[in-house]
Amino acid sequence: MTPGQTLAQWEVAMSDAQGLIDRLAAIVGPRNVIGPEGDLAPYITDWRERYHGHADAVVKPGNVSEVSQVVALAQREGIAIVPQGGNTGLCGGATPTAPGRNIVIRLDRMRAIRAVSPLANTITVEAGCVLADIQAAADAADRYFPLSLGAEGSCQIGGNIGTNAGGTAVLRYGPTRELVLGIEAVLPDGRIFDGLRALRKDNTGYDLKQLFIGAEGTLGIITGAVLKLFAKPRISVTALAMLPGVEQALETMALLRSHVGDRLGSLEIMSRSQIEAIRDHVPDTAIPFSLDAPWYLIIELTDTLAGADLTTPLETALGEALEKELISDALVASSEAQARAIWRVRHSVSEGNKRSGLVVSHDSAVPLDRQAAFAVKVEKRIQEAVPHARVAMHGHIGDGNIHVCALIDRAKIADSAEAERLVALINGIVDDETRLQRGAISAEHGIGLSNRGRLARVADPLELDLMRAIKGVLDPSGLMNPGKVLMDKAEQI
Image 1 (tube, rainbow, N blue to C red):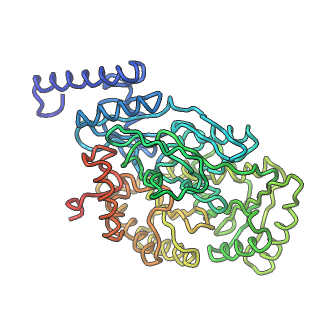
Image 2 (image 1 turned 30 degrees about the vertical axis):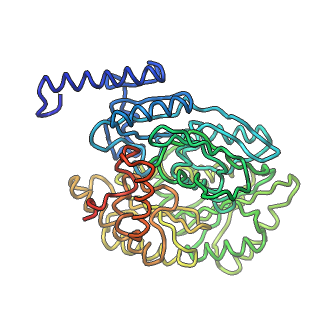
């Protein structure tokens, strides 16, 4: 019983809850519904363990028809719906936190690879497919799906599409939005939008699939997608360069592009403080290089020709960068094992930061020519405002996206009110500098719950009005992932 609730009210609530469970079970089967008596905790807590919500049930439909029926039932009953993929998001977008009745819809059972076409370079998948399984299916067809991120062994492609995930291959292949040809989605009223077209050219009106990509489940539930495949890289070479700053990293990128062109597949930057956080808190990740430079740049070249020589042009470019004093040293991986060890450091960032204490993480994107100024000014202002914070940065240097993370030892935070004050202070600094550099506060993580207030502060009011108008047309009842992305105008006052 909840505080203030009478026994009679509690009994009615329990009866209503059981009735809902029974109706959901009639659609998806009893084994595929988790009710209040089951273990809901993994589904109502976000990956960072910042948000703890509530749900009347977790439902796992097995096909798009079942998703449609569950959504239609929730609409009739006035029950909010929270779509959830692998629950690996960083902004609380998949956590059911809105007041009232909620159900979480998971697509774990919808993991089929529906079709692979090496001729068309496409793969058609269900939304519950784990990203790593899609990569493997593409590989089995002698093709390549380039989306890659640290959670690829557990994140689901529906969530990747819903958040327009970025990852380490954006420099060459673009974010998820550029990898999607077609979408299947269930609308908030239960109707099925069948946009699973594998067409490279389609100019027949509005590109409706783009509404769902990056919408974080607020406009419907993505149930399937047609994705682009590419020729498989046959050879790669990885290097690590040490640099004094972000400006030199950008100059090194320009130099690399002049030497190797589109063979530059990934370019990831990490500050020394970021690597130190991994060293200190992820003991099973070895740091295979010395920490005596302020910044580190991971460079990966790839080619689809198995016999291509990538090492020579890379070494030539790095030698020129050394002569120009853009870098202080460089290490070219001599084996696949050494390359994996370097990349493991990069993929351990989230775990290292999470274990460091309170993480105030940001996902800003700014124009390339302003990226160095952004990094310098943000770090200086945060250190002045919160001297005991460790400012760690990492990101995708070639697409303007550097993640600024302030890591604060929880032992130095008096209480939750102090934590909230620090978060608001640091967010204000980063948002201010992002705006000054004409950037965006989210490049790939999304808005979710964490960033909706920040979006309301920095976005063009007209843009927000247009977003609310679209939301109102597709989800007039406001039941699809409520409380995420957009704030009501009344909340902003």
